[in-house]
Each structure stands twice: as structure tokens, then as C-alpha cells.
Amino acid sequence: MNKLIHTSLVESQQHVEILQRDPSSPLFSIKTFEELPLKKELLQGVYMMGFNRPSKIQEQALPLMLAYPPQNLIAQSQSGTGKTAAFVLAMLSRASASEKYPQCLCLAPTYELALQIGQVVRAIGKFCTDIKVNYAVRGNRVLKGTVLEEQIIIGTPGTTLDWCFKQRILDLTKISLFVLDEADIMIDTQGLSCQSIRIHRALPKSCQVLLFSATYKEPVRAFAERIIPDPIVIKLREEELTLSNIRQYFMVCQSSDEQYRALCNLYGSFTIGQVMIFCQTRRLADWLSAKMSRDGHQVAILTAELTVVQRASVIQRFREGKEKVLIATNVCARGIDVQQVTTVVNFGLPMDQDGEPDFETYLHRIGRAGRFGHRGIAFSVVQRETVRLVHKIEEYFQTTIKQLDPYDMDELE
Ligand code: ADP
Image (tube, rainbow, N blue to C red; front, side):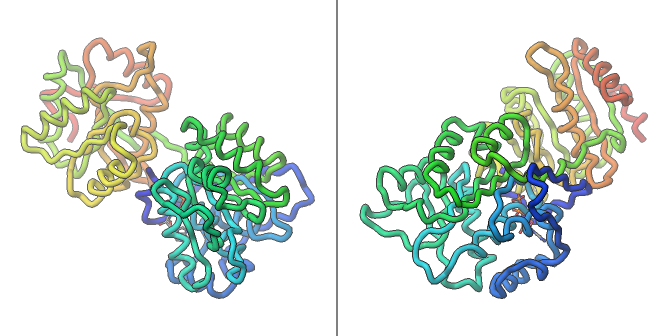
């Protein structure tokens, strides 16, 4: 989803970490696109995109991705840090316009993402007029017996498998660059990682493999190892969320109605630009959203049953300021990147199944209010029986969460 909504580069303060097993392979980084072995049409494309200099991950990944002989690579960095642009450059660089058959294959977990990658290929490849793209995605029917002439194929694993083994229109034997995007999502989505592995098995041994992921936890590592046994891994640590520049408060209420009144008081007592409100369940989010709308607030709601595209559009509208309040459930707490939001409300605290505080989710909900050096403010409106969680959170993060009277916000000023 983040991919669908990022329209600019996320700057990272973190250092890039490189792990490699083979110390003899050359590693170097670049500070300008001109240092790369890119054809001039591609450089023009890069300029057209308005990219002045490579992003942090691109500085390290691009020289490796474009090196000769080709190297297999795993790159992990959060969404918005320039991975797609990097592998699109690699594909456009590899594809030979004069050869009319598929040479680069890129797999993405969703239809929307596949199309979006295609748009980036078209944009960066604007001056590579003879390089064509086709999409192995549902709904894109290609007649049996067709011989694909496009140099770049972007698809979802299911349809790609179908094109390869059932319809036999996609010949994998001449693919020289295989890109697996959003590997972590592939693993989380049933079937996709197995399908990707099947596709990978049918590729030539010499095919270069590039794997991208926003996270690099154990399941991704294990999956990656199956595909790339001795990889070079480039990691850009996720920006550390911190609570240090966030003022945290909590209010204790007797019931959800009282929690609602406290929220309204809070909202009325000082000018909040935009606010994100997190609820533990969808039911609660629906209830709150209906109540706030009835009271005349412009509210957007973000829950897991929206499709990725719908979610991206909700976030986009909120970013543009069309709604002042965004109510979200936990599922959406991570990775939403709305930089102007400095106020977050927990309408109830995040808990795990045992009723203990979900510290990580708390950090993700609140931490984003204080990103990029902003001073954020976070309120937790809780019921009496969960006050103990507030104290556990304080202890865990070695932080202070001040109590406020839900009916008297004076202390805030
Ligand atoms: P990711 O694949 O890691 O989510 P993207 O490649 O989609 O990241 O990049 C995120 C945004 O930043 C896109 O809008 C992209 O056009 C832009 N971008 C990518 N690389 C650069 C760069 N070197 N300079 C400026 N903007 C960039």
C-alpha cells in the first residue's frame, strides 16, 4: 500500500549495511547517476524524473545491480526509499531493444503493484522507445500461440506461472534478470512464495536475481536463501521510531461514551490540525467514525477490509487535507506515512491476545507523530481497567505518560 501512495522519496538518516559472503566481489558506492554504466537514454529518463542524486539504497545497490558479471542481490529498505526506481533502471539497462523476446521478469504480489511498476518503467524508460513491457496479470488475455516480443514482463506469480506452464507463451529460458519485489508480502500471502519459487526454478542458472523487501526478518531470510544461496544483502535500517520528542498523555474514562466525550473535549480544546485516531477493533472504529460523522466531523476510516487501492486513496485524501480525522485500526498502524500528522489518539490501548500491552504497535502508532524531528503529541483515552497498561508502557519505554483530566484540558497549555 505504501508503494501506491509514495510520491516522493523518504529520506533516511540510517546507514546502509552490507553483508556479503564473498569478499572478492567488488563493492563500491556511487554519489551520482553519471558514475553508473547507464546508456544515455536512461540517464535522460532519470533526469526527466527529477532525480538529482541516488537515494541511500540506490547508492549501494545500483553499482552492484549493474555490475558485470551480474550479481545476485537482496535489498531491504522501507517503502519509499527508491527500490523500485533502482530495479527499473536495472531492467531497462539490461533489456536489449533489438532483441524481441522477454529478457527481464519482475514479480510483484498484487495486480496494482505490477501496473505501478510498469508505469515507472514507462516513465524512466521514456527515451528507450524500443523497450516494451507486457503484464502477466489477471485480465490481460493473450492469445494462445502468441509469441511475446516485449523485453520486460511484469506480473503476479499466479498469472506468470500460467503464462509459463499452462499457456506456454512466456519462455523463461532467455530471462537474464529476475526481480522479486515485496518479498515480505509474497511470503505473507498464501501461495505467492511457492509460485515464485516454481518460476525461479525454471529460470536459467545464470539469470541474475534481485530480491527486494521492506523487512528482512527470518521468514524473508529463509525464503531469500532458497532463491539466492549466497547473496549480497544490502540493508537500510528502518528509521528508528522514538518517543523522545513526543509528549504523551492519558485520560481515564468509565465507558466508551465517556471516552468519546473526552475525545471531543480534546478535539475542541485546542486546534489540532489533523489527527489520527487508532482503535483496537474494526467495530470500535466503525462506531467512532459514525459518531464523529454524526457530530459534524469530516472523518475518514481505514480498516483492513478495504482493498489496497481503497486504502491508498483514503490516505491520499487525508494527506491532501480533505479529511481532518483519520480513524484506523491496528492493521493499518504500521507504515502509514502522513508526515503532517503530529497528533495521535489511542482510543483504547493496543493489546495482545493476553491482554498485555502491544508495545510495538504503540510505538508505531505514536512514533510517527514525532518523525522527521517534529514534536508530536499523543493521547491515550483509556478505560479504568486498562490503566495498568499505561504504566507498563511507561516502564517498557522508560518514558512518562502524564495523566489528564478528560474534562479539564488546561494542563495541556
Ligand atoms: P520503494 O520502491 O522503495 O518504495 P520508489 O522507488 O517507489 O521506492 O521511490 C519512492 C519515491 O521516490 C517515488 O516517487 C520515486 O519516483 C522517488 N524517487 C526514487 N528514487 C529517487 C531519487 N534518486 N531521487 C528523487 N526521487 C526518487
